Length: 396
Image 1 (cartoon, rainbow, N blue to C red):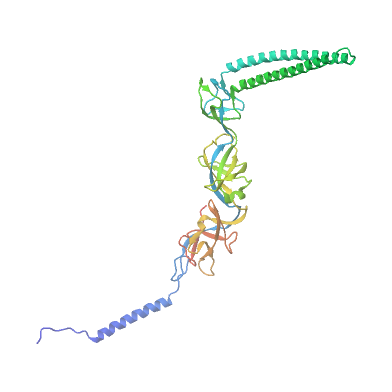
Image 2 (image 1 turned 180 degrees about the horizontal axis):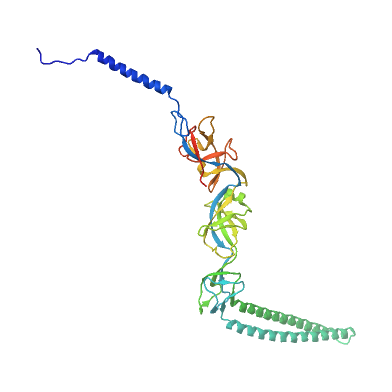
């Protein structure tokens, strides 16, 4: 007898196991076939994504125009290096940095002794010239009478013709000398007027009301003609110089725009917008000047500014919150709830054309979209078309 023996399983065991497997499978299929879809607020489409919680907002109609943001810098309406017109030592400086001055206020005084001495000399010259003119005028009167008498005597054959010619020549000479002395008097008077102007120029005055931003000379220094005394910037209105792309220049002509000062956050409406008719060769931008009121002098030259300039017509457009627009392979779109006869509404995607964005609103056009329609603004990040929606209330 061999020591190796094998245990055999009866064939009926295999038949029994097969019957159990077939019965279990049949029961599972029947249960699935007879199962009814779940109903209720949390139910989803069988085999589809679960319902999404969303928030809605209405489509608005707002009168608006497209804007383009540009940058710029504040500049004073007037900025001048106030210079000396005459040479001399500085005797007095009446202003310092930060001081405000009125128009025609005295800024500095220059030593006037040299000009005053020349003025005294010019007045003496005028006195001499006036006396000489009076003398020559009397001489002309005398020779004119003499000529007239000799012409009458010559008519009656009492004197020769040569005596008449001599009298006429003397009268012509005296008239010429008299005219020369008159011109000398006028020259002396003009010199006196010039010296009077130069004396006035020794007081350096402000050509306009403004603020002193720099002082370039000190008391006792010698000032040459043209030497800067102070730098003065005008007070009152101030200019915002903006860099505007040339394609937008025509749309902005003559408009009034709000300008925001970057450092302070102030937004100030301009009183006018002026286009400088010269474009930059490198940037291809135009300089535009927006005049801003500055009654309290809080705006100072050199601050950076921004402005949103209108580049399209002001008309009514559809607007939705920024969060309503989602991007996809087919371009931008929005989701709206589509009601169903039974069960929850489903998401419907509508393609849109974005016109422009202004702060938290996007202006757009879309076929079939109208004012008052509800769009999904929250919960649309991973939303699918035809996905069931559970609509919540928007927090104020």
